[in-house]
Amino acid sequence: MKPLSIVVREDSMVPLDRWLATELSAALGRQVPRGLVRRAIVGGVVTVAGRIVRDPGMVPRRGPSVFIRHFDWLPVAEPALILRVLHEDDAVIAVDKPAGLPTHGNKDADRPSLTGLVERHAGRPVFVHHRLDAGTSGVVLFAKMAEANASLARSFAEREVEKTYVALVARPPIDWPREMTIDTPILVSNNGSVRIDRAGIPAETRLRILERRADSLLLEAKPVTGRKHQIRVHLASVGAPVIGDSRYGGPPAKSRRLMLHAERIELDHPVTGKRLVVSSPRPDEFGEQASPSRSSRSRPPGTDRRPAIGAVPGRRPAEPRSGTNSHKGRPRRKPGGGGGRGSRH
Image (cartoon, rainbow, N blue to C red; front, side):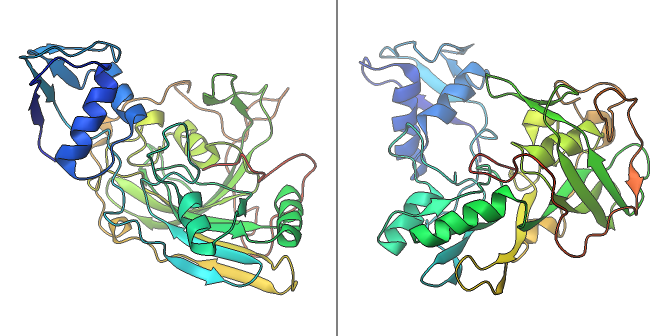
C-alpha cells in the first residue's frame, strides 16, 4: 500500500489517534482500529506538516497535511469477514481464522473478532480454550454447549490436545538437525512482555524441518505446553524468528503477515469421545516466501547473543535434542498448566 496524505480541513475536536482512525477507515474502506493507529503514531510513522509526531493525544488543527509514511503496521485482514467453518456439530465448531483478525474482541467495539463472527453464526455464546494471535491464521476450536466446554477445558489443561503449526522462519546461522526440541522456560512480565528466562514457567516446543530454503526454513512446530507467544519466542531465542514477526526480530514478509499458521488440531471429541482431527489448508504464502538476507535482521529484544536452548533452572543450557522426541501420538503429560484460555502462539 502506498503512502497516504490527508489534509486537515477543519479543526478537530478529538485526539490525533481517533481522528486518524476515522479518516483512514473512510479512505481505505475498512475498519482501522484506533489502537493500531496509536502504535503507528508512537512508532514515528505519521508526520504532521512535514514533522514526525509521536503524541497520539495531539489535536489536529486546520491546514496542514497528515502523512502516513507506510502501512506495514496495518495487518492484512480478510476483505470480507466470511466465517470459514471447518467442522461443526451440536457440541463444537472449528473455524479457519484469517491472519489479521483477533480471536477475541477488545476495548475497540468497532473492531471485529473471530469470537464475534462465531457467535453470530451459532446464535449463542461460545467458549474457547486456546487462542491465536491476531497475525496467526488457522484452526480455532470453540465449544457450543456447557457440557462440551467443561470437557474441553480438562483436555487442554491436561495437554491431551495436539496442536500442529507451520512456521516460515529466518534461516539460523547454523544448520539444524531435522528434528529438535526447545525446552526453555518463558517469563511473562506484568506488563505483558514475554521473554526467555530461567525464572519463568516451563515451556516445550517440538520442531521438525519440512523444507530448507536459501534464506528460510519451513518448520512444523508442536507446542507441548501452551504459553503466551511460545512458538514465536522459542524460535526467536534460537536465532530463527518467524518471518513477519517484528516484535521478536523477524524480517518482514512479502505478504505483510506473520508467517505462522495453526494447521491442525487433534483431540477426543468432548461428547462422543471419538478422535476429532481438524485441519486448515496451508496458505499459499508459505510456498514461495523469501526473506531478506541475514545481515538485515534485527536481534529480538530480550535475547542473548548466543541464546540458550533447552535451559533448565539451575543447570547449564543444553544443546538441541535431535531425534529424541517422537512427533507421533499425543504429547506427554506434565504437571502444571498448559493450553488454557490464555495460551496464544
